[in-house]
Image 1: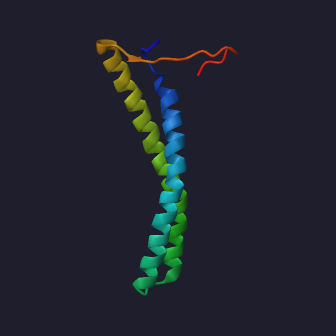
Image 2 (image 1 turned 120 degrees about the vertical axis):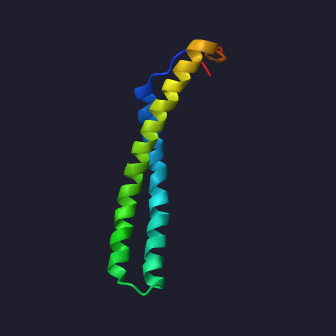
Length: 101
């Protein structure tokens, strides 16, 4: 079997979800850095916590949007290349119970 075309919106959704999930730990690390920075600079700690909460919420959203755009672009580029040089050859194996792996 040869993969000739990928649906860009479906790849965008998957990439967006994965990126958003990865954005949560990134947001937590950035939030921790913001709190530590506010504490080390002897600034008002409430501003550090506000920025931390904003980062925990915003990073998954922003990374999800960027991931979705990257997924769509990657699928469009794959479709462009596959139309000119052929697709990716995939090999599947069917077992006796009828399941394809």
